[in-house]
Image (cartoon, rainbow, N blue to C red; front, side, top):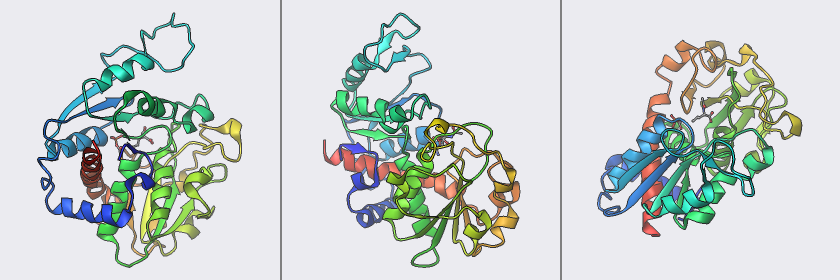
Length: 320
Ligand code: AN0
Ligand code: CP
């Protein structure tokens, strides 16, 4: 595997899930696979889980790890070609990427949507420069439009807890004070469609996700109706994807607190498990009682980030 962005990059999904459960049983099973190999993790944005779980995954495989926080101690990077660099940016990505590639075998990149232009974000301009100019396998650790390590961990979690062959999974929008990317809901929808689940998406009007990720999945604008009989509730805020109205891309269109997932919502489900990728703002996205209930999977879900990253890195090491 040379690039990890989409579910299709993983190849056969059941075999990847099989490997994930094998690694859950023994996370050090392939502890010599990465011997003498170096993983470089580059963060343009903050992270707790991705930073720790991806490093842990690399260590499970015997790799060395280097972490660079671009905005803390490195030179500020220009990303657009043709710019006269007379501002605060001292170095261009076109030099920085091949330089960074000299010191590693695999590169992970976190680079959120910037909301400056839908075309730039949905064109994955930063991640693609790493793919194009590094000559190394590259994995998205949440880039502008996708968060595949999260979606893979979410799928492992659903596999682990499902009580029926084809569970009803509801992806619900919930309010948040700031504009957030669509990467998590995009990948979640994409990966759930590839898995055998009954997916329903619910959000206020204007929050329609990009069809390349949601396909023709059922969208239910009545949140309570969507929750009926759900086996899993996956909450997430996202800003306007700009699908129905391009000018609104990246905007906060609703702050409606009626969408906060609370016990009233959970009561109409099939005793659903609650999921969120974290970090979560309590009593905006979800109430204290729902996230603290025994049916809340937020911690096992975060634990599975180590597993998804171990599977992905193992497969990248195999193709070096
Ligand atoms: C980010 C997002 O919504 O994409 C990261 C989630 C994993 N969340 C925040 O910035 C709060
Ligand atoms: N879920 C997730 O990716 O968390 P971080 O932003 O803390 O890495």
